[in-house]
Length: 391
Image (cartoon, rainbow, N blue to C red; front, side):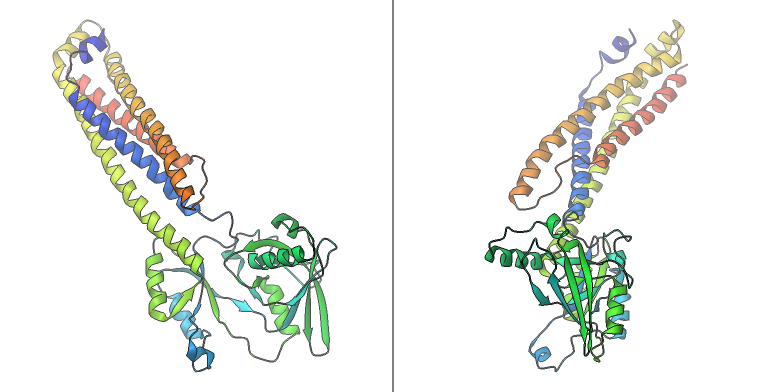
C-alpha cells in the first residue's frame, strides 16, 4: 500500500541517472583499489628483499678503471644521501675483507668449489624470519641468501655432469660449506641456503658472520663501502630516479623497472580512486536529493497515511527499504562488472608478462560494502527527518 502510494507514480529519470553514476563510480572504485593493491604486491613473493628496496652504487667509467675517481662512498656522502626526502631507511652494505670460498658438501650434487664475494645487510631490509637470519661462533651452520644466477650456474655445471638440475627447495637441503682463509689459518663453516635473490649479485650472510670473518681472517687492507641499500618511500620513486641521474649513481636495471612500474601504476590508480570517490559522492548526493524530493512531493500522502494509523517508523522503513534495494542493485551490478573487467585486465597483464595474483582483494569489495552502508545510514536519517517533518 505504502509502496504504491509513494513510488509507483514518480518520475524515475533522476533516480536512473544517479544509479548509473553510482554504478560507474562503484565499478571504477573497486577496480582501482584492487589493482593498486596487486601492483604493490608485484614481485613480493619472489624476492627476499623488502618492498621498494634498492641497491645503489657509483657508475663505473674509464676514469674509475684508471683509478682516477673513487667508486666507494665516504661517510659524508652517506650522510648526505640519508637526508634526502625519498629515503626511508639507508645502510651501507658490508663486504668481506677476507678470503672465502664456497663448495658443495653433498652427494646430491657434483663437487664444486669457487671463491665467492659475500655481503651483509641488516635484517630490516629482508623478509627473512629474524630467528633464521642469525649466526654466532659455534652455530651448526651459517644461513645465506644465494643469488639466483649462482643456482643457474650450478645447474649448468650439474647438467654437464649428467646430473638432474636442482630446484629451489632442493637447493635449500643441499650441503654447502665456507672455507675461510688467511696466511697460516683456515676454518670451515657449514652453510645452509634460506632464500634466493635476483637483486644482489653477492652471497648475503648475517652481519655477525661478516664481522667475525673480517676480524679473524683480515687481509690487512681497509674495507671500503661501494654499495648502499635503501628503502624508497612510497610515491617518491621519481624523485629517487632523478637523484641517481644527477649524482652519477645507478641501481640494478630490473629493480628500477619494477620500481618505476609500481610508482607509475600506483599514481594512476590513486588518481582513478580519487575520481571514483568523487563520482560515488556526487551520485550519492543525487540519490539523497531524489529521496528528499520524493518525500516533499508526497507530504500530503505521508500525512494522510500517518492520520490513518500508520506509524512514522513503518513509513520510514518503507522508504529505507526501497533505497536499500536500489543500493543493492547498484552494488551487485558493480561487483559483476568488476569481475568481468578483472578477467580481461588480468589476461592483458599476463600477455604483457606481468603475473599478478588472480584472486579478489578483500579491501576492494569492502569499499563497495562500506559505501552501501554509508548510503543506507544517510538515507535513513534523511527519510526520518522528512517523515517526522510532515507530522
